[in-house]
Image 1 (tube, helix red, strand yellow):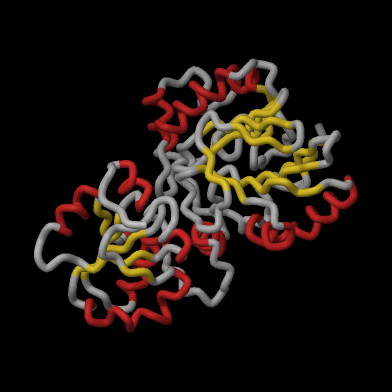
Image 2: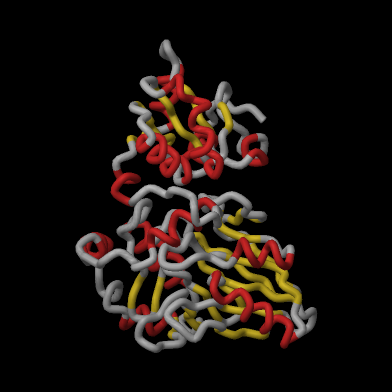
Length: 345
């Protein structure tokens, strides 16, 4: 197996390559380093076979969309990833083949709802779930310290002690650890109960990443246009969230709300379908097309997307444009579909 960390910085991108077939995967690529990755692939004579993000990043722009455009390699993320244009959605226990390499997917939510780790041969790529002598923060929207503790202790710590640990970030100059070492010495997890871990993680008081406004929402939406008026985190936090059952109850009333789906056209008619009666205005087009729903400025609007993330952005944009009664479908079409509520395709 060809294995390289390519960034030599706090953010880690890993190259996994099959030496027999010369097929390779890039894990957690950074947008600013795309040229470097392509050069390394060429140097080793590798064909890019998969582009994998272990989660939706908040501190840097992903290079996945640009690498896909340049190479045609599929983008791989967990089913709960909010972004469009993910070619392969994976779930816990699924495997990915890169030449003769077999990558096992471990679903490890907590840092984000879409977090995964990748177990291959003698090592595990742990994303931002388990760091070297640390763990990824769990205080972003959708974070869950309890779920993170369960993922670490029940899935990662179930791997052999000698398994090498390669995280997506390191801030102390480490390159790798082992599962056994983290079990024994990780100061956030070792010797702590689930409740103690939750209390610790909920009271870290960490500042937000410097580039969160420039990175998080573009990564969630795959919108590269820098003129897109993304709302602030404070505006996002003010959006009213409705569960699928609450939305269904509102649809049974008269007058029923406007259902505004902000996914891409191929998603609207794709695997998850759409809620009957909804209209489609993709998020990237919403600021320019908001006048099309001007008649609903003082009426109820419920915004919908895949996972409830892009639609939260859309709801905040509409609120900023003077729409007075905008809500978001929490969990998006994923939760709507999982509850077997009506859809059209």
